[in-house]
Length: 288
Image 1 (cartoon, rainbow, N blue to C red):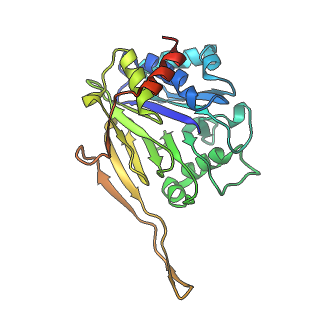
Image 2: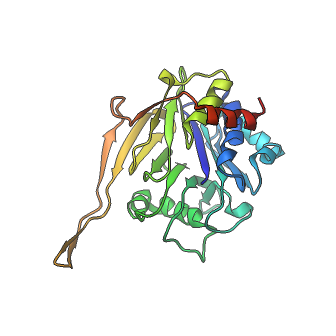
Image 3: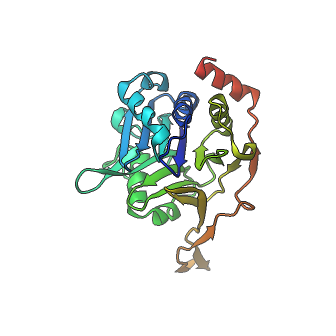
C-alpha cells in the first residue's frame, strides 16, 4: 500500500497556499508508506524537476532540495507526490517514485507514480513493477492500460511534457479521488480524500462544493496542462477473446471511447467530511 497525490494548476500565476497543501500532503500521506518519499514539480518554465529518497516523509521534508521544490509549487503547473510502502522490486533511492523518463538529450519529460502491484513485469531490467509500468505508459499508455492483468492493482498519476497532458487512472483495485479548489483552476488528486480535505482546509483554501469524486475504474482521466478543470475521460476496453468449444475464434480490437467531461457524470460523490480516525492520523502527522 502506497500513497499518491497530485495538485495541478492551469496557470503559473501564484495560487497562495498550494506549497503548504503539498507539504502537508507529503507529511500525511506517509501513513500509507514510509519506505521512500518523492516529489515531481512542473515549474513555471515547463521544466520537470524530481527529487526522491528512500526515507520517511518527515525526514524528506527537511532536505534543502525538497524545500526548494516546494517553494516553486505556488507558481508551478503542479506537483506529484508519492510515499512508498515497498512490495515488489528493489529498495533505495532509485526505486523510489516518481519514475522519470528523459528525452534523447537527457531532459526529463515524463513522470509517474503508482500505487499497487503488478503480476507480470520484467524484473531483470527495471527497479520494480512500477518502474517497468512507467516505461510502458510512456511508450503507449492506452496499450499499457488495456494490457493490465485483471489480477493486478494500479492507481496511477502521471504528467507528460511531450503532449502537455496530466493523467490519472485506477483499475478499481486501489482508491483514487479528485476534487477542485474553489475560485482557482486547480485539481487535487489522491489516495485519501479525507487527508486531502484536511490539507486543503488547514491552509485556508476551499474545496468546490465541499466534494471529492471517486475515479471510475478502468477510465483514463486526462487534462491539458493549461485547462486542468476540463477533464476528458477515456474508457479503457479490455481485449475480448471469443471462444467456441474451447477454440479461440477471434480477438476483438482494443477500443477506447472518449467522452467530454460532464459535471453530471463524474463518478460517485464523496462528501469531504473526515472520519475521526483519519482526522486523528492527520493531526498526529502534522503535529497539530
